[in-house]
Image (tube, rainbow, N blue to C red):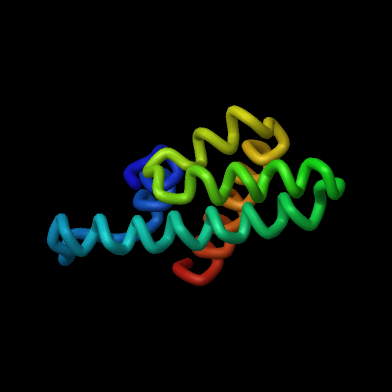
Length: 98
């Protein structure tokens, strides 16, 4: 899952000693963590009807590489949350790495 999110996060880390495969695995795992936290936050902040619809779409498209785009298109607030969660991770990573 190579995305703009992963590219932004990659800029925070020094990858010079990692192989391309290691970089891709790291970024996929990291992207998955950010997506998971965004999904949980969206569900907890949504009303019941929206949460149910979101959960159905999440289940239907779970195997898609562009799941985050599908959900962002269908739920504009999810896109906002995803961006906020990405930025929050970036800020936390900067604190740790600085």
